Length: 475
Ligand SMILES: [Zn+2]
Image 1 (cartoon, rainbow, N blue to C red):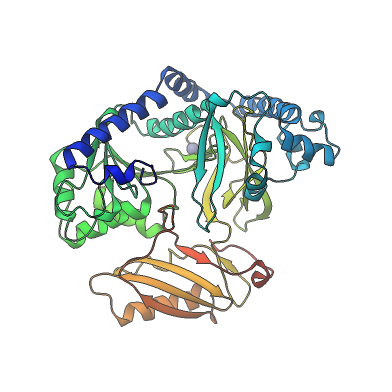
Image 2: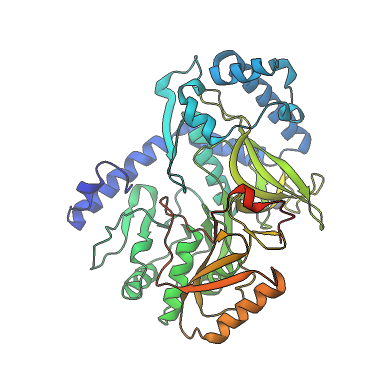
């Protein structure tokens, strides 16, 4: 919303007019998104998630075959790629054939955007989307209306698994500036009534305003929260530090957009007692994965295929690798073998989840492929949260690697943080990550977010040449 052309006007309006604008925004959003087609798709998804492994495979292969044929016949980019490799649609009949095609990089789309639009497309059916990108240039692309509807239906199916319906009242904790940043009197929230939603943006979750926010949350019952985990974590920590608690906590917190780190999960469970249910999705809408009641990620196979490439077997079973996605809905702007640039660990394909669903099971989404630290010993490490799990007085931390052999830990201290905490972290890193890695601490009042509002726990600016032969990802 803060990037909307009318935003500069919105932030100058009095609060009561902002409230009207929010209502209108919600009304339009609901009308466009939650139409009859949405409810039909949701109903279908609630059935299809109970399909057998054979039914899932047959569905994906049929969709894929159709996608490849359409892409070859009507999408210039894929015609050129396949012709150059002397491939015909009949060469790619099922998921096992997909590796015959090269992966698609963001750069390929950036350079050839128009070549991705099918000749048969009615442009009125296309919705423009973009990602703001964490490293500068964003990506512009289209998704068709069917994909947009199915993506929302997949997200609501996830909520449905935990008993939440389309009319459940909820709070959305985000970075979007529904409450302008310079507002210094309550209300620090905005009602989006047509969506049964209240927005609270992170810029106001501060020690001086937290009491107003918690009082508001205690005035009524919101069944669930949706949030970037780093934002709702700040809410919990700031409230607890100020001796505040929730009288009517939500039953579930749905997280997305960032990895939920261990210390965030523990803190949220302590503060709310709620179930934390995560889902992995992105604007390109060519795949999605969401946690089931057992806390396991399932591929939302109806939307797209998630392949594991450049894989490495894990010592405790499962396979680690890059996520490569193929969107199965419609051929208007196809994403075929798209490198989303995140890593994950898949469970053994024969492993069955005790929830009874047969869709592919993913143990963990690891995050961005360049967000790892390389130790002088050559080991790659992505997750540091277990190092911080026993550090009570660290509000947030971010690990930055700019050169091989050393890291900088940016940290926001809280409460009684002392020298002994720093010493403890140094020792833990020596013990678990590397005995020779040079560690520098920088204490900061806050950790800067990326341009897209996301928090990154690990940031690396090493060139691939510096990375050398990385050995494995630590668990
Ligand atoms: Zn499951």
